[in-house]
Amino acid sequence: MIAIVRVRGRFGLKPKVRKTLELLRLHRPNHCVIYRDSPSLRGMLRIIENYVAYGEVSDDILKELIVKRGSKDMKDPDQILEIIKREGKIDHVFRLHPPRKGWKSIKSRYPRGALGERDDMDSLLRRMM
Image (cartoon, rainbow, N blue to C red):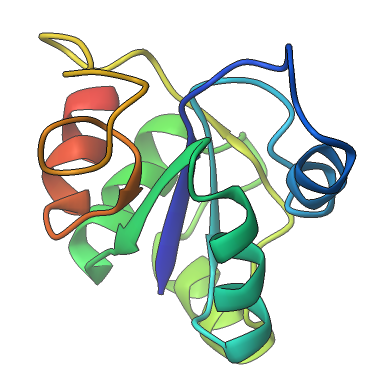
C-alpha cells in the first residue's frame, strides 16, 4: 500500500498537476489517501511528485490511521484493510495535522526536504496523527 500526503498548496499549479491532484482526491495540504501500488498510480505520482510526499506504509500504521483519523463509519480496522487490499483504494481522505517538528522544506526533495518518495513514510504519518 502507498500513502500519499499533499504537502504544497494550490497556487501556481499547472493544469495537468491540478487535475491529477483532483483525481487522487488531494484537495488540500495535509490530506492523505491510500492506494495499492500500480503502474498507473506510479505515472500519476511522477506528475505530482513536486507537490506530495509518498511511500510504502505498513499495516500497523494503517490500522492506527484508521482508528485515530478515520470517520465514525470505520469501526473495524481489519475489515477496512481487507477492503483496501481487495479494491485497491479506500474512499476516504484522511485529514491529518501538520507534522510535529514541522516539514524540513516544502520546496526540496527527500531527504533534504519533504517532497517525493520517502523511505520513512510510517514515521511521517505517525508525526501527523
